[in-house]
Image 1: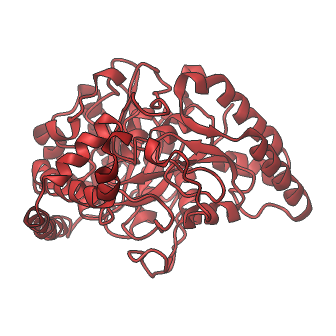
Image 2 (image 1 turned 60 degrees about the vertical axis):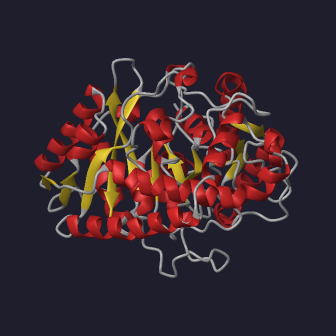
Length: 461
C-alpha cells in the first residue's frame, strides 16, 4: 500500500512505520518507474536516506515535529535549493546552483520532509511538452503514452505513481490544477500572495502562485499549512495570519452556496462526456448533502483567457528578454517560439489587459456575491497522447484554470472518476480570496464519499 501523508504521519507518530522504510519504498519505486515516467530531473537517493535516518533518530528521541516529519517529498525544479542545481528544466540554467533555499523549501525542510530530489517541469514552467531539452518530458503514470499537462508535470507523475507522497508545484495559468487533473491527484492553487515565491524561478509575476500537490485533499491541507505565511522577501506576499486549513475537514457541505459555472464547460469549451458526468454528479452530491447549488454566469472563458495570456506572455518575455537576446537557441523550440510571441506585444496591449483584468475581477466578485464556492471543469477531458499536444494548444481553446490566476482566487482540483480511455477526469472548485479552509472542507467531503482515492495507476503496484 502507498499511504497518504496523513496515514503515514499517523503510523510514524505511533512508531509503526519508519521514515527509513518509507523512504526506501519510495526510492525503490522511483528507481523502478522513473526510466519510464521521467518525473525526476535529479533523484538524490543517498541524500534522502541520510535525511530519513536523521528524521527517524529525531522522532525516536523527541517525537515528530508534525505530520510532515519523515515524509518523502520532492520539489519542482524551479524551486531554489541551496547547493543543488535548479535548472527550470532548461539548457539555459543547467549549471545553475542556488546559494539559498526558496522560502517554501526552507519551510518544508523545517517541517521535516525527506527530499528525494528535483522534479521535471515544462521549460521555465511554460514550454512543454518539449523533446529537445537536456531531460525528457514527464509522462502520465496511468498510461505513459499520454500527457501529464503542465507545467508541474513531474510532480503530478511522481505523486500519482507513489514515488513521493507530496510535492511542490507552481501555477501561472493552471500548472498545479492541470497536472493534478490529468494525473488523478489533488492540487491547490492558493490565493495570490498566500505562499511566498521568493527563490522560485518566475514566469509571470502578477499571475504566479506556489502551492502543493498530493494524493488527497487532507494531504494538500497539511502541506499548505507548512508552506503558507508572510515573507518580506516576496513583495506580493500577504501579511495575514495563517488559518488552520484542516479545521473544516469532516464538517460536510450543509449550508454552503455553490455556483455552478455551467457555461464554462458546456458552451465556452465543451468537455468530454465523462468530465461532464463527473461535474454533474458532484453538483448532485453537494445538493444531497445540504448545499445550495445554482447556476451562475461569469464573463466568458475567452475573455479571461485573452486577458490572462496577454499578461502572461508579456511578463514572461520581460523575465527572459536578456537571455533571449543573448542566445535564443539555448531554449527549446516550444519555449522560444512562445517567448517570441510575448516580444511582439506592446506596452499598450499589456496595459489594456491589466485594465480588462480589473473589470473581470469586479464581474466575478459581483457574480459570487451570494455564493461561497464555484464549481466547473479543471481540464476538458482525459489526457491526450503526449506527441499529439499542439504547440499552440493554449491559444486554440480557452482553458478552465487561467480565470482564477487572473483573479488570484484559490482553486482546487479533485478527481471525479475515469473516462472511456481509463484515464482520470476531474472537477475544479474555486473559493473567494483566502477561503482555502472552505475549499478543503467541500473538496474533502466529496472525496471521502467517493472511492477514487482507492485506485492507483497499475504500474505503481
